[in-house]
Image (tube, rainbow, N blue to C red; front, side, top):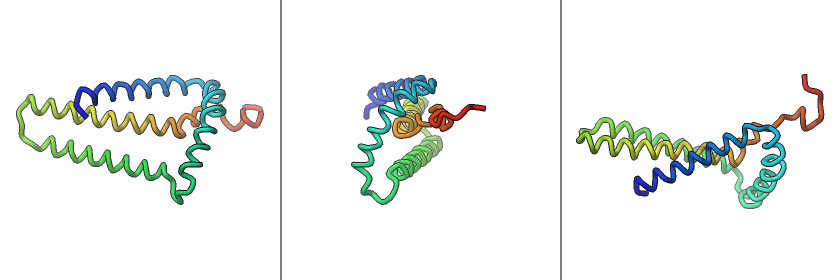
Length: 133
């Protein structure tokens, strides 16, 4: 992906992350929208498509993400050790930084979409109608 397109894609993903953060800041909105409308259908589709796989696909995704982040860290260390012109250094550092931010933002977005917004629900006491202390 070209650096300009990568920066635009990173900006879009960061905007989506901000939208998720703002959306999940309201427990009522999460309970009424994500937890009762979106997530059950989304989880059903994932279960239908991936239920035959004997291990967690999320664990595979997290494993790939960790390997990708380690690979980017190794690239950053190799990059820091190379001798190059100042302009080349800043250009490559910018590309590497945008790529790393994009990877982290994608992980955040995927985690929240697939499960993480559930952590912002009202809680089991609300669902069971128990008095809060």
